[in-house]
Length: 67
Image 1: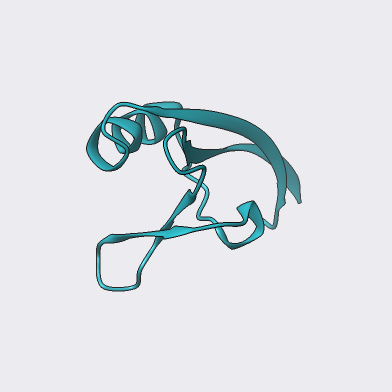
Image 2 (image 1 turned 90 degrees about the vertical axis):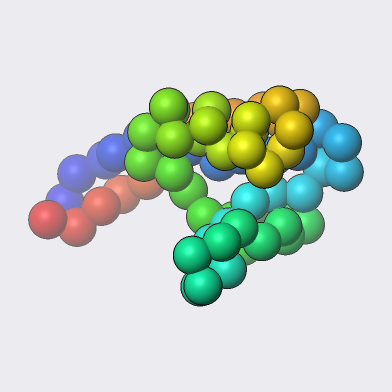
């Protein structure tokens, strides 16, 4: 096991977090525990532009990953 950085996106307009909807799109959820982490900061920044109208923040967290 090892620790990897993961990036969460939150809208600054309505304070919701992003997650995958299962159909290739994005859904909005109120809790970070339901959010989908992005694996790169670039992907998270792109999500802010594409899904939050450029008005969002990215949180970096570290998660334990299994090998």
